[in-house]
Image (tube, rainbow, N blue to C red):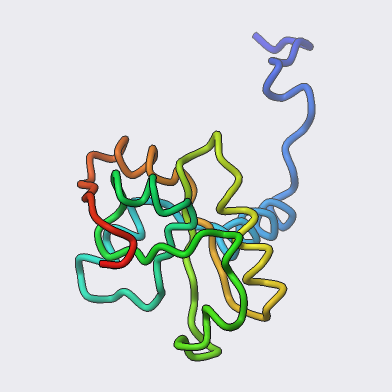
Length: 139
């Protein structure tokens, strides 16, 4: 039986497929997730530098294996000089309650560097069941 009532989900009509394609494609150009980062790091296809953009203290407590610690406030050209200009950076912070990854992404983009944010951060990594390690930001 048809009804004139719509759910709260469809009270605002969904976007047409072309608009949805552009929107979700744009998100994927800007973001990646913990699962995809983990997969690339473990299958040998890693073609990015993973940056933990929190401070050295939280990094020392726990971080993603293979990540480099570069706090967002220290992202300047001098600290990126060792990386070729076409390096893709993936940035992460503590999790959804933290905006350090967004700040880092802005700084990298202003320097003309390719960047994606790993959504979820440390909390998302942990939620996926992936291991974290402890250690100094200097190695």
